[in-house]
Length: 409
Image (cartoon, rainbow, N blue to C red; front, side, top):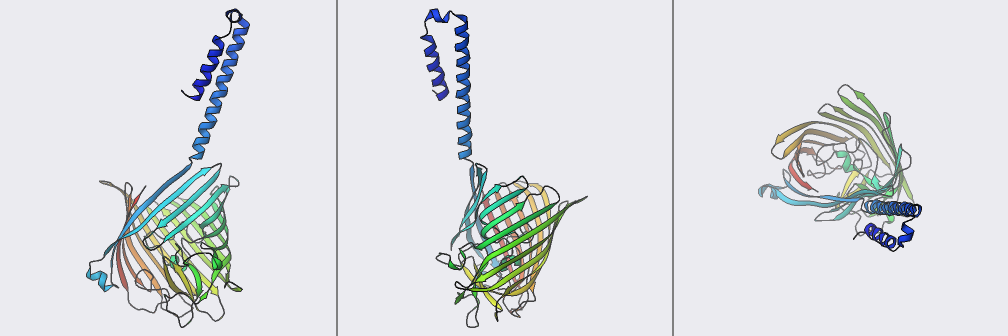
């Protein structure tokens, strides 16, 4: 018996105990009926409030993905002799939802070689036009949300300027008119900066500076002198144009912050980018050009880390990219959507006089129910994860064929 039914039954029992003489009085009977109706309304209101509270308490949704990866390449002779390798990629959980008008967004990833939190932040609509995001959130820099279509993203990711997440506060203006503004202040990187209490500073999702690279160190060594970014201000502006073929966002991003060695301020760093993100019918076009500069005395290389790996990059460089994609709705069995793309990016004018980095990815993203896959053919030179490094001197063009398959739930 429900709580409402029990209250109604008790009230009815009380009424039956009223003497017959009293019930014969029409006015008293009418008053009792009114009281019964009022009590029933109160009970229904209480139950509605309890139901709304239960719904609110369960407002956080849990999803995730399991991904596997096959690849073969030109730079690993053993892998070529085996016909490539088929590996477990990642098992991840996503949390999203809202309780009491405060939103939660988080993602944790489990790899064979590390476990990391990609992002974890609270959001709150301060006004109908502005939202605040607090915690481990995305640095608003460059084309939004990514400057790429492929599994490998663009070379910008490998210098920490695409899909980067740090600890701070972001104020986002929602697209209410034809312009959008994101303002961010980041106290330090996702692992607590120079004094972060972490077991291994290279176990992180996004690229960050972790040290100075001296001449005696290899490109993949742990740095002897540690360094970290702190007190970084970021601003990104987009102007949205509606036209006969779709919409185009023209934007600019600027970034400025400090570098710290654990005891003293060690320098500053800045970056800027001009970008365009355009939807033209089924076509999607992205352009971006920019530059970054880590200002350290007599240092032209810095140590960076992510994905359980240390690497090296120049303290200063210029970046350019051009990406195009075609979206195609299909009906091939379970396959409902294809995105064909070609992404090209390059890093040049480097402070350490290393050779140019470039990467071209030709591929297709396939959607089939809960399955989402990338099929990529990569050609690259001095490109991380394609047989090189941003501070490399190789003149060889490396190739990688990659298939990443994910089941999303």
